Length: 514
Image (cartoon, rainbow, N blue to C red; front, side):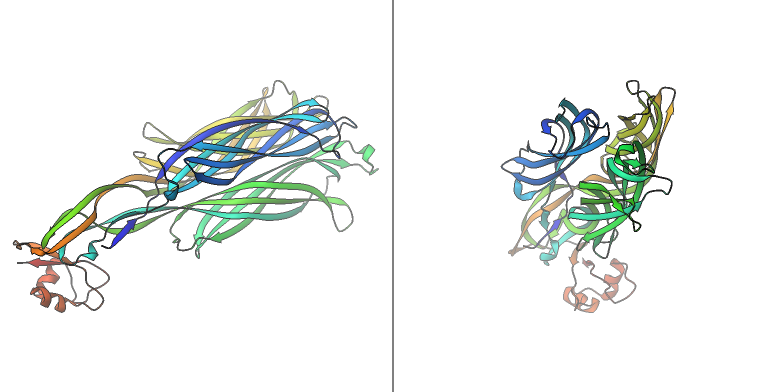
């Protein structure tokens, strides 16, 4: 018995977990000893995702960048501490054969406590989202396999949810500093944030446009051009656009795509320009790409309302699945403030911001985008020393959309368009704008025949006004069909609202039996 499958995009397991890990690290031999810690930043990614024996196992990788003041000369230095932790989540009632696992992580905070001039205690907090999607389609009975049974057929629109991953990509870029800035003596501190500006399907490829936002602090040299006289710090920021693509075979261009970039590692260094002066900043980075792809598929199925020509046995089942409902894009504004009582800033030199979405919330039949905006501000105090202030602003922005929130689930992609930080009345005022792309899926059910068997030895008497649903092949004509069932061509055309004798496309012909 022929069957066809209904593509599903159902999440059969979802979990959100917070992990807090602490480790001791020592400065490498080449690094100068620390007088005090200035700041700590971290970024995380997940590798080696395996689902077996009822456990979702993965490796949580975190790299923490610590900026500190050196003991020798009071210069700002920075050093990277990478470490990995094995994690696992228990998942009950799900077989590994029909499971597609997906795990992603975001480092929401990192701090470094100095235990000795060469020893730090590093503490990181990671926000981990774990999901398992149904990988196998649902097989249901195909009515085209039974030509001697009259079946009521219908069309449904199901959805496929595909996860596409790209292997780590490497990108390098260089930029000269401004003409009014001094030569670079040393890169003291830096940060890099990746954001997706657009992603789409073209030519069976997932293509994306993104940008890397670099912020760095470097120690400049004065006219004497000696390390002893290099005392001023310069803050520099730059956005670098880049793009990429990878294969997505058999995915239609009408599909909705949500793409996320994960920074794996990077380094920032000073380079010499053609004149032999250190006035160029070079960045090398590695990142990975994950895309969620949603698209609709029309399928024909048979329900349990059939009128067979023969005695038959059948089995009906209810199938649940999720289908693509809507997709929309929004721009949302964010405003808030960071307190800096413990760090007496008198000016802001630069700032870095990152938006971390937590999802879409439904309240009073309205949609709200929720998440956190993490901001790090570089400034100076009353003594002219470099100071860093970090904090987060909760985000709950209304979404002006026509999508009805009932019985729906939302997948989001978010990028920061701009962020402004201003000193104002004892606090840092933050104003930002974000771009949000959202895909909505809704739950649906069908009752379909899971099995059907015709007993050709037990014909049933045909009643009046019954119909046979006939599935013509490429050689059939209305004349041959009418001859087979002894029904005039004009009657067949009238019952099927056909204006021509030509059968166009693969359609079901309803034949009245009188």
